[in-house]
Each structure stands twice: as C-alpha cells, then as structure tokens.
Image (cartoon, rainbow, N blue to C red; front, side):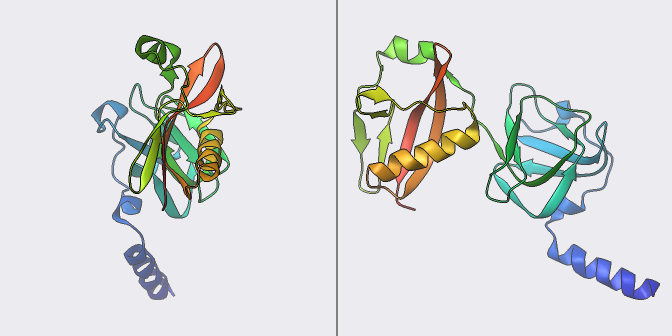
Length: 193
C-alpha cells in the first residue's frame, strides 16, 4: 500500500508546476524579487509555499494562511479561477485563511494630481491603432467612467464593458484613478483578443 501511495504522489508531482513543489525554508519578504509574492499554507510564513510572478491561475486551490508581499506592492488573491471573489492585500500578512485559485498584481491607483498636471480631465479622446484603442481618461456621456467599488475586480469588469461599447472584445490593460474620493477608469487599452 505504501508503494502505491508513493507512485501516486510521484505521478501527481509530475503534473504540478515546479513552484508548487517548493517546500524549502521560507524566504523572507525582503529577499524576494520586487514583483513576486509567496503564499504559505501555514501562518507566520511557514510550511509549504509557492512563489507567484504575475497573473496566475492555480491548477488546484492553494490554502493560503500567510502571504509575503514586497513593500509598496499590491496583490489580489481570488477564490475563483478567473479572478473573481477577490481580496486585495497591500502588505505581508502573517495570519489569514483563504482558498486561492487565482492571483495577480494590482497596479497602484493613479492620484488626481497626475491628470491635473497634464490637463487630462476626461476629453473623451483616444489613440486608435489597427488592433487596439487607448483611452487616457475614458468617458461616457461626457462624464468620466466611475468604478464602484474602487476594487481591481470592479475595474476589470467596468473596463471590459467600456471597451465592448466601443466595438472591442475586451480590455487588455486598465488602471484606477482617484479624484475627490471617487474612483475612475484610466489608461484603458481596448483590443480584440
């Protein structure tokens, strides 16, 4: 029986990405590359861990009980495998419980001062290419496109909807901007996928 368990474990390991097999000593957050996070299956950055670089969909759920995030970075961890049911984290957390099926970095929110300095208050103009269209400050009906709540998940949904109303199949990139306590779409790149 032990032999069949070992054979099964080896077969399962062969199907899983290398990052899932990392069970070495935990890496402190300060030793991490600037764009990666490490999820641990035990609290206080212990136990089996996996390191993630960029948007990731896990082949099977990972029970995250602590997470190391580099200073100044923000990540979104989601219970759905298509970036739904998400929670945002902007710092390392020594104790949490979440079943993670997908994860992605979240770009920082653009402050209002960025557009004031450049005079970009929502002109509705865009730069159209052959296969995409870029909107710095997207508008609908003469008003900036507001995102409520100001979360990455809501931002993604709103950007996709905005792009579809302009004849594109989706959004390849989008950001949030905060102005007077409200969140608006910014830097939206619409494209056909």
